[in-house]
Image 1 (cartoon, one colour):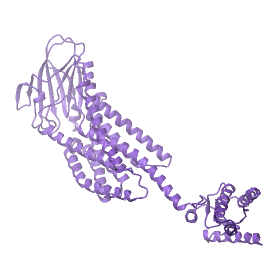
Image 2: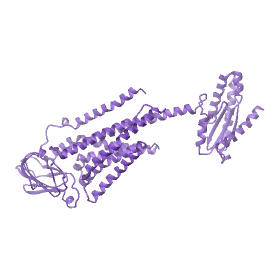
Image 3: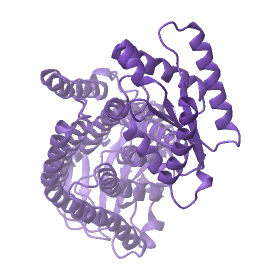
Image 4: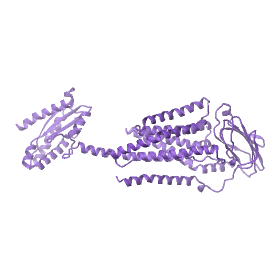
Length: 565
């Protein structure tokens, strides 16, 4: 295959990924968002802030940064809800790892998270929709947050005030991209899973497809939970919180298993080390969280450190190992010019790049940034995993093509190695290979074409070749159910019948003789004649193929002597 064409196809992938990125950025941007805000206020400015030690007025929440929090600390925010002609006004408060209390004119109208806090569990992220009475006057709003963990958050999410329709409309507009990406990944996961089951049922099992399906599912679940979609649509907040972190922590495990299942000979010790580590890590975290030793969110930095360390351990040997396998493929007689592994590695490198970007953004938002978004946007890791899944799709597509082409080439090469060029029957080497592997009862028919030397000497080798070809065609017709029909010498032929009936050999030999008689009636140049002898594998259970063949061959020579008598 032309190397230039292969490279051109390979470098088309970044262009395709760029187009996908551009489409997603456009799809998720404000370009597709209506300019009006559906009777919706973003309560960002005019807050009074108090944490017990520090009090200040006229605070803008998007610019407020909290340097340190401790468990049990109380943060009080007060503001004024301006009168609005709203029907069933709704206040949205978004919280993370904090008990929420909401007061209107000093009257408590809402509380959430206290049961988790009192039981020592992590208080999950939540969307608090507080339905207020219709109002025509200003009201004092007070939000009390009780922190449930050390350094639980550094910023406070901005509340929304408006109609329920307006708030939901805003949420769905902002979350178009996460909804699309998460939905695509979940559906793609089920398609891969169904395909893997089908391949197992058809005895073409590819376990790596199950692991690719698991990667897509984990990422889809992480996308939905990270972007608060499950929190908004359901009421299992603690379960969704555990799901968010566990889906993230288990992604390296699924990737490790995928690589080990597709390339077990590439750096096997390092792969097994990473595989064991990625298996123990989420189990240990889940157990520690369940025993209330430490909450599940405390392991983000260790998770990032372990993932970075694994990249440093695995990436160089993976690249070298795959390059070595690629060189072996290039030198192989069955190489078809398709290199699926390159696409998998490209996807993995893209995943690493976006993962490192996400780690950097995580620490920037936690320790440096002074701005806050009311709704979480899709993160770099999700984009990287989406590209990785896309590259995996290309990998499986090309791997299937490569396997099919390689099998075809292998069959062609085997055909050249095991086929008699004159007759198209298998040759002696293929017959020997067959008899070495056959595990069922069989019959051997040894056949010798009579008078071949006479025809060669009298009419020439062209006539002799025609005699051999014509006889081989009759042989195929006479033994339609034969497992093997081969030419093992100049005028010597061999037939094997598996699980033979008692009279099958006699019937086929008689049919062959009828075909020969019919052929001889129309042939003007030469006449066909053959000597046959057969033996069943049950006649000698100890000697193996050689003994059965000798027995069939000796019976063939008995007939040959009669023909020459």
